[in-house]
Length: 116
Image 1 (tube, rainbow, N blue to C red):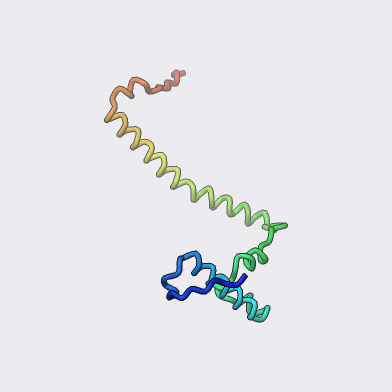
Image 2: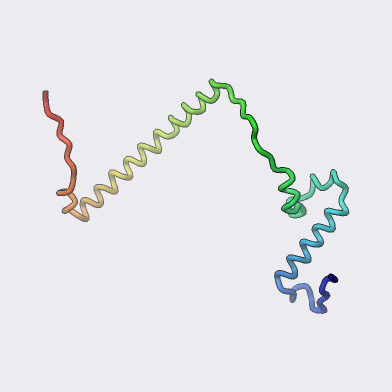
């Protein structure tokens, strides 16, 4: 099927026609390029099909146990300030709610530990 030819300027073309024409031009440039040059093409020149060809799956991940343990400790220590901040924010939110709605104080669950 021949490509439609419009006598109007390119700016007057509907967006879909312009995008389709640009996609065809990109595909033509990729076909003209040598195979090794297509790997180094700019991001705009690479089509979706080319990106899918480079996909892969991780089969195995080798991390030494001590490195993994160190990472876990770092993650735990990094979470402590976030937990403290979250606790403070929740406490402030509770205080604000109890000041605006004093009847909520009657709904509190008070925990008392027996002495001895």
